[in-house]
Image 1 (cartoon, rainbow, N blue to C red):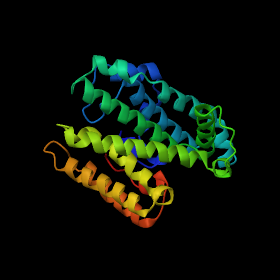
Image 2: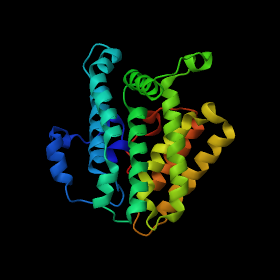
Image 3: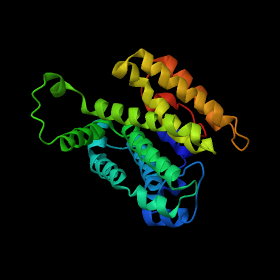
Image 4: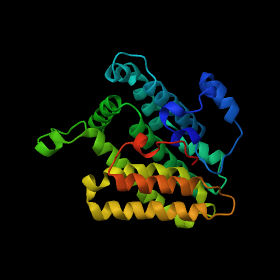
Length: 256
């Protein structure tokens, strides 16, 4: 999880030589209260970080060429996130009761998908978003000019952000261990950078206030270190800057 809030070029990469199966063996039987997510989603985070590093350090002649080379991996990864069987995992790992475990797992799927969309090469994620949008509405004749001109990437990100925040607003007050949501809060916080354009200044301000206050509450828990508060500080600086990209938020390594 630490690498997610570290600049792509500065990640700790020693574990990147492990295969997916080796990573599963390492994580097997481990339940991380700060990452109460199915194994498939935790592996997806590992893969996203590896792709972030690959994109940032690519030796291709242009960024566009590097993105094109990674596009099939990006598309497959996003499809795998969609296909992750969170319900089956929760039945066998209902640490907080089945209802809360299901809610947490679904939140993490939204957060992991949004993290991928926010951090991986934009040309690849845009093509995936366009295909996903078309598949979701196969009978749409696209008669509306606004729909024709709508950016599929921004549309999908906005939908993911809105659902993620709605689910966290409902669950956060009910959690006995609120640090469960520390990482999804950070993902949502970065995603709100474009919320003013998508849904108005008032809604964006409310979303940012919720994330900021939630991270403060999480930081105040007895067993939590400085990570959530440092992320909160970085987010507040990021929001004030008017910037929108993940790498523009986490310009230095920050533990989440």
